[in-house]
Length: 223
Image (cartoon, rainbow, N blue to C red):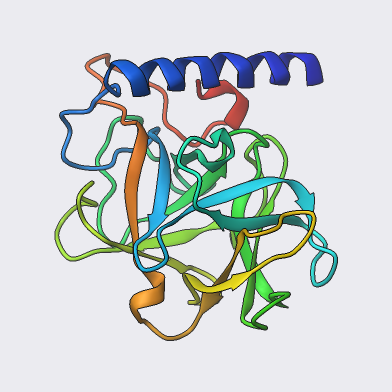
């Protein structure tokens, strides 16, 4: 299984790089769709949402989530998926107010939050949790935007469904072993620190095939 997952990551990264140099799949779409694989930019601090197989040394001890200034890092890709209770059909526009999961492509863990304190700012910790895209209800985030669907050129907020914290960056920087990366956490107050925008990635077009798979299946079958 580990060998298969490694091969999957290599294949996916090859496809992603190819798409980025030749024009992303679905690049003409003006909105974000279920099944898309994207990088998310914090607009205020100009860092992309990132994770890696490095665990917090405090709090939950789960896989850390950070913000990075590097554009090309493959550890900043996230898959847009439905929740365990609400399917998200591949290629369907993500609605404003819809609850989704964001699954880290390279590790298969979901963007997650809970009431542990974050290590630098003591805000609400944000981590990556689960295995092969399956975790728990604390992996669910509601997309807050101004129209009917999540537009690619729009700055949006992500509100943690269970705690109502907003995914945020306020600029605190880590030392070793992730020197210079920014802390990502959740905050209760809406402000300039919790706006995000979809950037590079593969944006899935609506499927023309009847009975296309919903995007709530186990993560490793999605690509």
